[in-house]
Image (tube, rainbow, N blue to C red; front, side):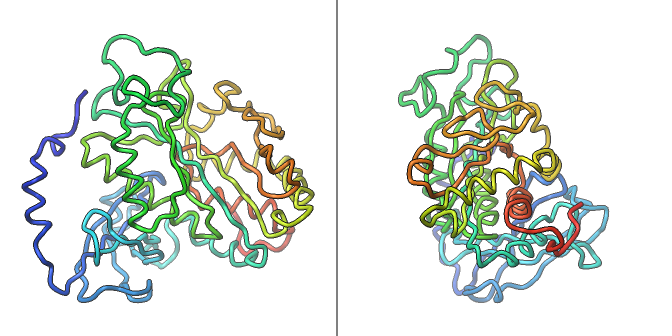
Length: 368
């Protein structure tokens, strides 16, 4: 299994430098989404003191033409969310940023800004989300982690939530990522091995409003960094291996104040009816706003649905699923199984809010 050259470096040598005191200075790592809409970039600046709020952080910039973000030579980084840095530790920070073009307009892959406007319009509904992020661990230039270069694995069946060296591939990476997220302040609520070997899932939330997207993007960044230290790579490809293997999604749970109250099932069913009428709109948004190639996953096989809208109770093959417990309690949430692993959470959240909570004419901006 090929690994990166950096993984073969002696990590104890680095540690002696990381143990050095840093005085009163703080390292702030600015993180942003690049022009692919899927990959992340970062760079670090020194601050004279520990920032307490997002307003304490200065704007910054970067060369857009160097990161696939834009042809513009200079782009603006606008701090929007701050987390503890699990790699450099306190008092250092991870800073999630929006990207603006030279004219201060949102970059083409900046879906956070319109999402935030929509969230502000429905804040009295207290919308919350929980997103289930699936991913696959790969060697640098080989098959998925732990897979033989030549030969075959036992078919799918024993790997989901599996235990043992022959079933769970890469648990050290999963555990490291879990603890790093908790340290950072990410609302990571669980994790499990998935159906395909070397494929895993972590869940983020419930988070209210725009914070769901912020926490998921930082969780993805931390996973990339953990994999970097282990010398492997993470893939959010919706169908990482062709053939009789499961794809990778980012199932999105959604609820509102009314859905969680007594009799909330009626509000859930009304939302699902609206979603059914705008099914192709959602498929288009999910596929074009970050989640490219979703169709390779949504085939009607491997616990997915085909291109037609469907809804059901505890049916993993439905577009929208109501969990058994929710149906029994007559209140709670529903799950949208359509977003792919590489989706942009801001675009997914915004489209759900627009369909389920906004009436015609209330939209603050045209969704293009």
